Image (cartoon, rainbow, N blue to C red; front, side, top):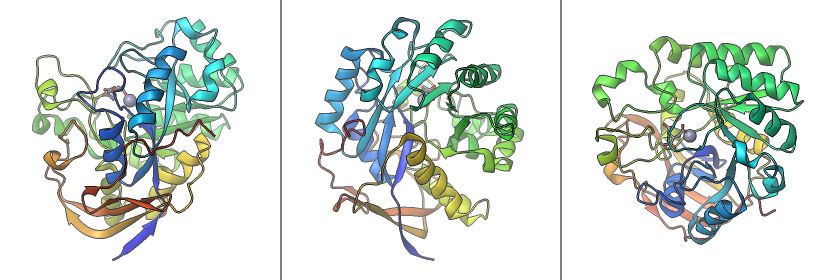
Length: 356
Ligand code: NCD
Ligand code: ZN
């Protein structure tokens, strides 16, 4: 092995919980966690409290991020029936539009039967700016067709089922403009892991799937554009409660999981960098900052421990796994912001990717 200098990673699906959920994570804790995972830019989801659906709510997240972010960031606007008329005006301030078609954490939603709202957003949001859909099962087919009819591309978040990746593959083979991401939890965990994790801790959306679904994702890696974490921090006392919220914190282990898969010969290092660095930058138009890189020890074996994480969630579904490959240091715009488990980043120095 080796100590390698690699391009820094970009995570296009992250929940940082500001405004309204700061006890779970905020822009500082979440971006320090990102840097520890080799990620120098995160795209933050809008299912906050309040949800980010208009200029005022967006400003709450913008101010929090400007004050506290340690790495670069973009912020998504949430689509709903109430903001059809003005979502497009807000496009310059955001990294993309997020449409939640399925039930998940928070209240932000486009009703599954509200076809009109979905089509209006697809028609009106600038066609050259990303739209990301949480659309499972048949709703993925709905999102892909609506985007196609609107003459635009759509990105399907956290694809987790064999039928979904087969659908996306078929659409791509017909030249339809669709991209997708898969998350580490659906590549490395399945329903077989639920007893070990426990019911509350295993809650995640999309739910963990069958080993056959898991195998289908690996078999169709060629059709997976990005690996994104869907870092969804919740505290252990919430996960272990009677109504456990769905989601896993993943920023600090995702790259190590993928490096472990490289060691196992499941894909190449280039395959991983394409999906965690190059494709995310291309799809969202995020240039690589100058003097920015990560150093990785691809041989080092280590065991993730929730208690050692920067994320306020402080737990991981991969607790005690033996992973091979670890981020040693991160340099962002010439400043070493992370090395050997210590965060040196200064809160508020992360840049809003929309302010270009
Ligand atoms: C996410 C969250 O907690 O915000 N939870 C999850 O299980 N992924 C919401 C989401 O992305 O669906
Ligand atoms: Zn999410």
